Structures are given as C-alpha cells and as structure tokens.
Image (cartoon, rainbow, N blue to C red; front, side):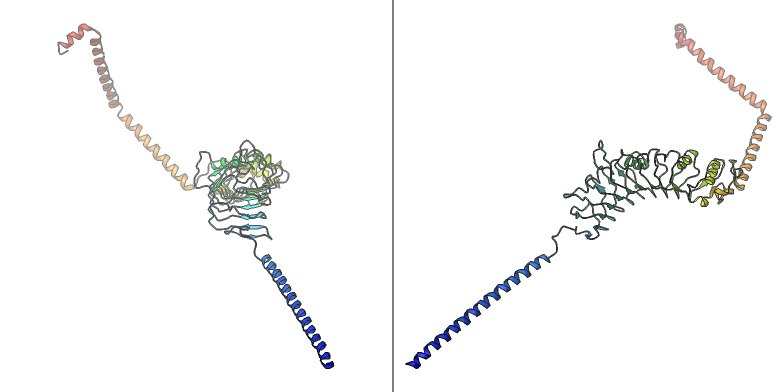
Length: 416
C-alpha cells in the first residue's frame, strides 16, 4: 500500500508536466502563426507600395521626366495636344508632329498646367493658330512656332483670351517665329501684315524681350509692326528679303540691345532710320551680307558709319553695285567715289552706240526717199482729196433729195 501510495503522486506529477509542456507548445505555435501573419501583412503592404504609380500620369506617346519637369512628345505624328499631360510639366516639346490646327484652349486642363514655362511646337505642321490658343498657361515664357506653314495666324493668337474685345497681357518673354512662310495664303492680306497684326494685338506682348523672325522672305514690315513691343531687347530679322527700312519705326524700342539684319536685300539706309538707331542707347546692329549700292545716295550712310559705334560689323560691309565698286569696303569710300552717273558695261555701251547709228541711217534714208518723190506724193495727196470731195458731194446730193418731197417722188420714178 505505501508503495502504491508513493507511485500515485509521481504519475500525477508526470501528467501535470506533460500538460504544461503541451500548453507551452500550443502558445509557441500560436505566437509563430501571429508573427508570420504580421510579416505577411507587412510584406503585402510593402509590395503594394512598391507598385508603379497609376497609369495616365504620362501620355503613352510621350517621354516624361518628373525630376527635370520635362515632357517630350517628339515625332509621334500627333494630330492634337495630348489631354493627359502631367501637371508638373515645365518644359513641353511637341515637335515633329501633324497638329495642323491649334484651337482655342488647346492647353486648358483641370487642374491647369500652371507651371508650363517653355513650349516648343516647331515642325509640327501647324497651318492655323486660333484666338486664345495659349490661354490657361499663366507661366508661359518661351514659345517656338518655327518651321510651320502658318497660313492663318490669329491676331489674338498670343493673347490670354479668345475674346477680341478683351486682350489681357501675355506672359511671353521669348517668341520664335523663324521660317513660318506658308505655301499659300488663304486670305487676301499679305503674310507680313498677318504677322504684324499678331504682334500689334493691343498690349498683349508688352513683356516680350526676344523676337525672332528669321528666314520668312519678308519684303517689308509695316511701320507700326513693332510699336507695341516696348520691352523688346533682341530682334532677329536675318535671312529675309527686306529691301528697305523706310516704313519700319524703331523709335519705341528704347530697350533694344541687338538688331540682326544680315542676309537681306538692303541697298541703302536713309537718314530717318540712322537717326532712330543713333537715338537708342544700347542697340547693336548687324548689317553684313546685304547688296549695298554705292552711288550718290550712299553718301550720308557712309559718313554715318565712319562716326558711329552702333554697327558692329561695319568693317565687313562692302559694295555690290556698280561693277567698278564691287567688293570695296564702305568705310574706305570717299564722297568723290560716290556718284550717280550711269555706268554701263563696255559691251552694252557698244551695242547702244551701234543701235543709234543704225536708227539714224534708216531715218536719213526715209527722209531722202520722201524728198525724191515729193511731186508724186503731192499728186497722190491731191487725188485723195478730190476723191473724198466727190464722195462727200454725193452724200450731200442724196441728203437734199431726201429732205425735199418733190425730189423724192421724182427720184423714185427716174434713174436720177
């Protein structure tokens, strides 16, 4: 009995230890399962956060860089401005596309493209820019429309509103319109007039500082084309066909610093233009590669060039006409070198002399023939006079018959 009594408690302690061990094992399993579930949820959350941002932040036809705040949609044959442009864009390139028409509010978005500062639309086949095409771009500073066949450029294209009666100022500081000559004009007015109207739209471009109009084949610019650009500092008109600046006024461009007129068709500059340039405090003018005509009309310009520091390339200006003055440097000319006598090539002079001799000989022969046949000519003239008189007397006789009724009856019954 005592032995049995001693064995009973030992067996109970063993069962108690087994129960405790089971409880420990059960707690460990539950804690490990909770830890694994927590780690799974954490890994799931990290996996979700590691996914790419939702689509639509960058148009599929474009390349976007949020760090550089630049979007490039280049050579994609786009026919309209992408609607899903990211709002962070500051520099937008839409070159080499087929936009054709830029309608009003082409860049209107919600939320707006408030930071867009530089817009390049060169070589995009633009034939028409509608009024208010660039509205809703409050930060736009640079605009490039070069190499587009713009046949229709609205006078309110660069203003902030399509309403012609309200023309708020544009934020534009730099406007590039190089090589925008259309293949054909749909309107009656000249291409120079279309561009001038867009530049003169109220005070819309009064903050503009740089204007490039190179390679447009301009023959002239209207007098007031630059009148509403008081802040302009750089004007590029090179590689056009300007024959004169007489009708173009620079008086209001008091801040102008550089004026490029190279590769035009200028033959002489008149005193009015020279005086306007001399009155601009900071301007530097470039005139190289123009066909200067060195005759008596060039006297004032040559004297002005020798005294002024406005023209930066005056040492390279040379005569193109007449032939005897070709390649002569303008600064080396004297007033005695500049005359307006017609100077013809020797071959042409010989031709004119020979033609004069031939005409004089023909005239002398004609007069000699008339003199030798003076009697026959006089007789011929008398015969013509007699014939005309007889003819007129016949008409007079018939008139008298028709006027007298008695003679009328007589003439009807006779052969008279």
